[in-house]
Image (cartoon, rainbow, N blue to C red):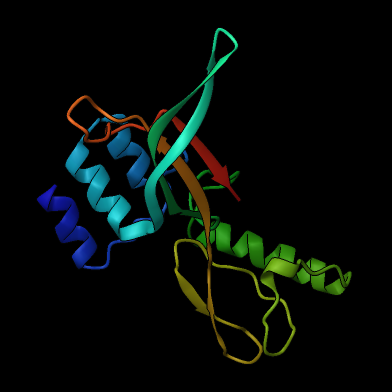
Amino acid sequence: TSCVQLLLARRADAFAATELGSTPLELARRTRCKGCVRALEAHAVLWQGWVDHEQKILMIPSVKSKWLVLVRDRRHNTGPSLFARGDFHNFIKKAQHMVREHLSTTSMNHRCPCCGKSSPIPDFVETFRCEHCKTLLVIPTSLQLALYEAEASGDVEPEPSTVWSIP
């Protein structure tokens, strides 16, 4: 837990996914390290709180309180890729971008809000400069909703019972 807190304090990217697509939060949940899960969630949380969750048991509705957390999840310029991420992958993306620009079929999520031009997004960065007007562009993360069961002690489990990813 102290290692995770130190890495976050030193600005480690908690939203980068591995080559297999796992984020640090998912890895902490999988290993059931409650302290690491709480530290990573505290870093990424947008909202959290108790909610009433309705479920039906034998057609009889029942309400149970569960802990709901909305967190920033992962950046789309990290994780699995056809080519290994890094310099070669960035070169392929630039070539695709040049073809797209030539054919006038730019993607909206690469468009600069200031100049309206499209720029390829480099791998493993949180921000980058527009190639045309040099505006600093931020790479957004996807979102994740996690629903946790309450333990008998009133604390919440380290691994959620349900996770929904929101692209």
